[in-house]
Length: 372
Image 1 (cartoon, one colour):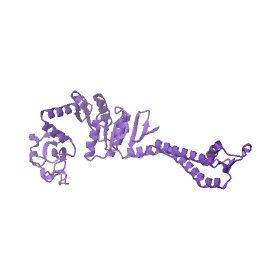
Image 2: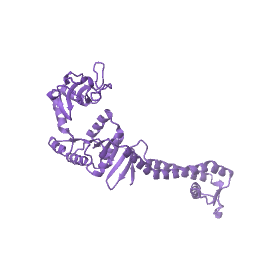
Image 3: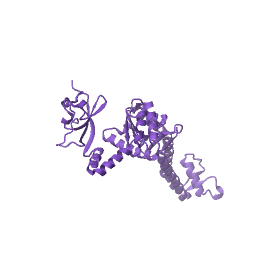
Image 4: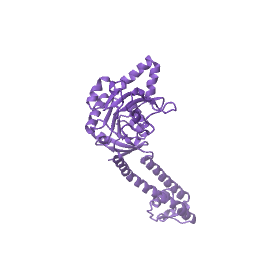
């Protein structure tokens, strides 16, 4: 398996499958390191040649009696190469005290540095792929119950930002995208990337799809989203799949393909634009609800012991829905007139707690399901 390198991270490439696994990395590319070392080696070579040439009267060429055993520029190059490589034929040798001291205290350290550069570079090139394969293997071993993001465009980045802001570990998020721009963006955000077509089983398997807990599919094409959803559902029947579609008419098809939740991006944006046009204040409130960490937020939380038996309208939080037996009821539905154990609440609450705006369920209170 060949390897490629970028400034953003190290990549393992599988040409046969057409996919790549890329883990974010802060270190420079090994090829950059190789180039830097080659430049250093060239500098040592040139420096040694100039030292020998400028002190050429202190050297003797035993193979050139016709030229009075003198050393010229070509001889300086020859002497440098055989000396730094430790070949040492002995035909050219320092004879003056100054030339010998220069060899002892300048050229010998150059020789050691030159050899260290060559050996270190060779070991680095040979070991870099092995180290990266080890990193990927360790990453795979620790991967499980993670989130897979298919498509890292605007929607994918926003989804990741929301997940991270709500406590999701970046190391437990894997991006699947075939674009170079997505690769660079995901690496900049500290995410692992599997580069390839998400509609192919092999690519999804590289992302650990069989052990993923959630999959978010956000490519720019509805047909690609449908095919990716079908493939994900086949590989992982238990994963919670959230998929985006551009057109409302494709929602039923997406749900039939196995998506648990379908978001219509164009309709959602259109509704928000329409609301903002009809009522700028309503539009600003909706934008507030969608913005993390400011003003209001929509959240799901467990029912507390002290809230059992109460009406949804009587709670400090603004309850908008109640989840009971995996079904969602609006707060005014007669079925949820009284809250019961096992209920979960969808609430509108302050994004940040204030003295006059408490956030129940965030202070380690006893939950209804935990009471003996």
